[in-house]
Length: 133
Image (cartoon, rainbow, N blue to C red; front, side, top):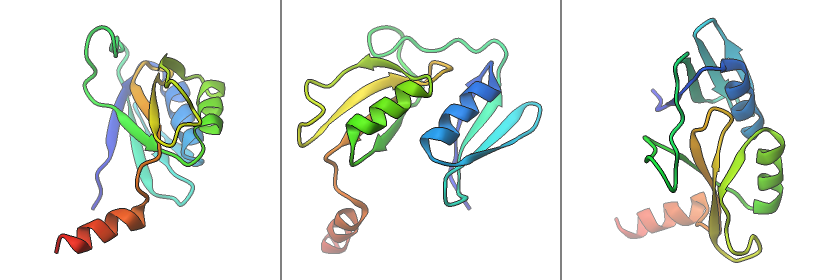
């Protein structure tokens, strides 16, 4: 039915509010699990209570287990939103106005994610797939 990435977090409220904000959605909560929905009501991320969660130290230290790539049209405004919601910039791009690039962040629980731009949109990807038969 769906594929959902699940993040462990010691602070469910902070972690789920961060991702709900990034996706323009909302959170459905219970004691040990939060479900994050996007603005269209699709379940996009789960947050599981892990009281002893230790965040990875990436990209320079211990490797991450998984990370999200958020492909956006406006990297500067997405960067500002991520930082305002509690993200930490881990690795910056040389130029946010470049035609293509990415920056690496950590969410409030320390999970890494990237904001990238200049990637093909959904229709361009569908066209490539059609062309390949």
